Amino acid sequence: MEDIVIKNEQGAFFTPNVNFSASTGKCVLQGESYLEDSFEFYANLTRWIEQYLSTNKNGLEMDFKLTYFNTSSSRAILELLRKLKTWQAEGKQITVNWFYPDPDDDDLLMEAEDFMDDAKIKMNLISYKI
Amino acid sequence: MEFNIFDYQFSKEQDLLLYYKGEFDDSTLLEITSFLKEQFRDLPRVSKKVFAVSVELVQNIAYYSAETNQFGTHKSKYGVGIMLVADLPDEVVLTSGNLIPKSDLQEIIKRCDQINKLQQDELRLLKKDIRNQPRREGHKGGNIGLVQVAIKSENPLKVEHKDVDNNMAFFTLSTHISKNQQGDE
Image 1 (cartoon, chains in turn blue, red):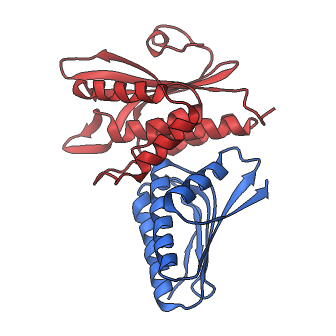
Image 2: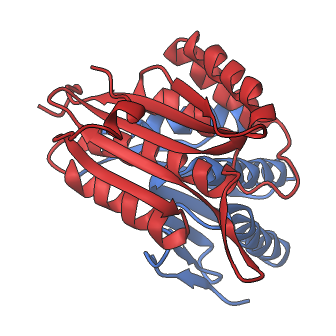
Image 3: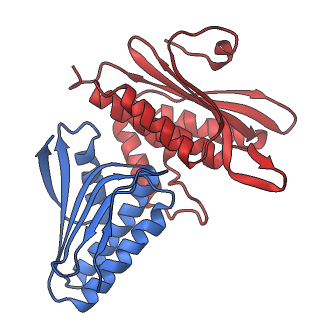
């Protein structure tokens, strides 16, 4: 199984940095998410995770370090979190970490709380200094 | 302070930071929103808010304007409209304008009125509520744009419209963002 590595692009849209490692199960999503087709982008990541979980006994750790996402990304992220929750319920080892900046100028902690509430998933909320 | 797009057409406004009229394709979208973010970089919270609001306004035009360019037989998928941003002493005023079918006007005005009646925590619940509904097939947006504009601006949505002909109206959506944000001083 191959890793997914996507470098942040600012061509016409903001693509977050993606670093999903098949060997460690560490998945990092970082930066700004403002995409032409959010649903397709996140659906690809979701498919990768599903495949990873079906072939790996080791757990998966998902880090969200997003600094901005538009409303359609927000919907797509919620769909991803719901999937993660489903797989957790099936017994897969999945840890979700949500990093938010301090000062939190874009209310990213609040967004995380709303995601947790909607997806019924637990996330570790971790602040970092900027 | 009020900023009226119709008055602007006939006056020389000095506080204008951005005026764009044309197609809102992908690169225009990025140019406008990045430019605005950069303009307020000394006020991080204002900058974030201006960026977030401008993304939603610009995408509204790109996806929903009834006007699109046509070159020969090729019809662009991106909407045409205007975006206008005024940098006033205490606030930033963002206005978008585009053609919409007159038949859609009442629905959109009703939605804005509903949004304007809600407090910040109620808006947050409404956003969650919309996000929890299944998205419409073939719909690129999140359907949450207007609510997000109200949440980020922390100010009411102002709607104006003028009939263009029997079928179309020019519709403007405007909001303002205070430049006195906690944490920016």
